Length: 79
Image (tube, rainbow, N blue to C red; front, side, top):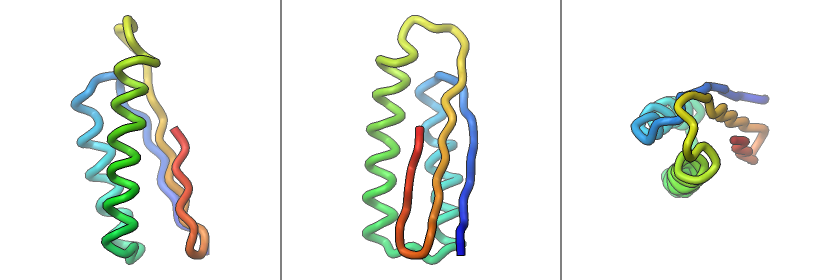
């Protein structure tokens, strides 16, 4: 069965915590193992920090969209 969430956050470093909180609920609801949760959290932190620091640098406004999809035993993250 396919499970997913999608959210958009503003280009502000504090928004990373919002994404992590939503992912934590998603992971808990779908029974993701602890190791997978930690790995995805590290990846989300790094990817979002990079996007907000470099990709959105100099922009006052803008949104970053995060999509997480779980299909069988595969987790896909798209930013």
